[in-house]
Image (cartoon, rainbow, N blue to C red; front, side, top):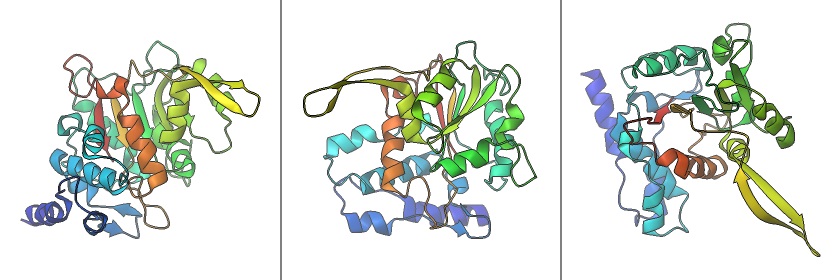
Length: 276
């Protein structure tokens, strides 16, 4: 009964309206059941795929005031792309992420072993998207507060858990790293991952520097099976990756790339979006 009551309460505030609804309504529909001690929004773990799709739509519309109805609709994520994980009952903390990944991999019988890397360089089977470089570092580092290897648990000599974020790592260095590594899991921010997916070419003109071409980058997506979105985590200002325009917009830009979106509903090699 408690679970049904919680779901009913979440559904009441999560249900989205037409893209024409005003900004005040979008702000009023904010969904936060924040556990301040743990630093997470516990509402995320209680949402099924429909509520998560509604949640993403709500946040997209909140930061898309300048977009038309058709443009907003094009950015929405289909419910079929989302893996239902509400039955996983542990707190969605950094230390529990390895067990969560194992649970998600078990939902697909064709899933690649988490400790194995695809043969192609720079082609992970799992991407973990976070709101900030510091959070990405916490999830990918060898030891977190002396307690856990977190995602490094899945690293081997033949499979690298790659740090894909901008803090203290220059783009050219990250590009060179990705080009020479077999990786099973990439952890980073949406902006840096987009940068690694695209090799931008610039040319010096008389007055400025202009972008002349955009080629495929070092990071490849052909082996990708899942995208983990670090949604429950709240920063010191109680903001998640969906609560800040500077993280939500690049996130939606990444999730709507053709090479991802075209595989959300495919039977052969689908990509699942997973909200942690």
